[in-house]
Amino acid sequence: GAVVSQHPSRVICKSGTSVKIECRSLDFQATTMFWYRQFPKQSLMLMATSNEGSKATYEQGVEKDKFLINHASLTLSTLTVTSAHPEDSSFYICSASGAGETTGELFFGEGSRLTVL
Amino acid sequence: RKEVEQDPGPFNVPEGATVAFNCTYSNSASQSFFWYRQDCRKEPKLLMSVYSSGNEDGRFTAQLNRASQYISLLIRDSKLSDSATYLCAEYGGATNKLIFGTGTLLAVQP
Image (cartoon, rainbow over all chains, first blue to last red; front, top):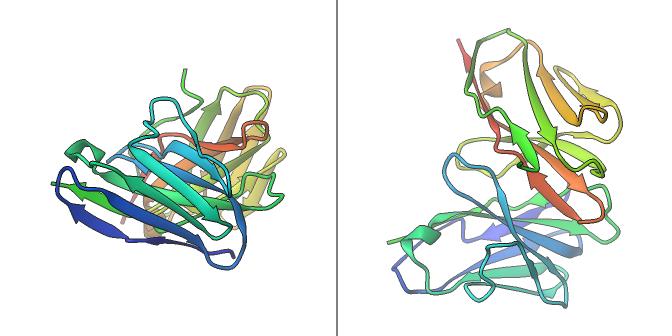
């Protein structure tokens, strides 16, 4: 099946710094990528949808200036958590769908666990 | 009302038992549904897709009831390795979003 790779898998940073997470589709062109966040013992919450070459669409309550999303190519999307604070500590997971995908089947990255000290 | 709702559990069952999870959804226009399995601190992995009335794969059976707006997952002959969180998700074509439920924790006991 299609593979989506996320990097880094784990990151620890100091409060106030910015952290970039990469999501790559390895064997298909991902026209749309989705970024989810999951707090402990909670479900995956959709943060934003990014389409290649256009601005991301953020879900209600997600600050676009804090969570910068770039989808510059068909195989790479990045999420940058700017000025991270301890409450941003979470499991961030990306997923991707290919061109023409209409069934909703997504391929997930391995996730990135962010800990802000 | 949440878009997708699940009983969080935990469901503690002995090996060999049959266990069923339900998941209700609010968007009547949802086109497809999925059951994902998520192990602790890992990404979700697709278990089954449900596009029409149901789907069966070995010990796992998923059913969709559009009239009552719920999907179910039945696991027969539970194995220790089935212990995980099971997430249901619904896809509404017009919104192009996959929305997850809170997940149901299953613990299969020896």
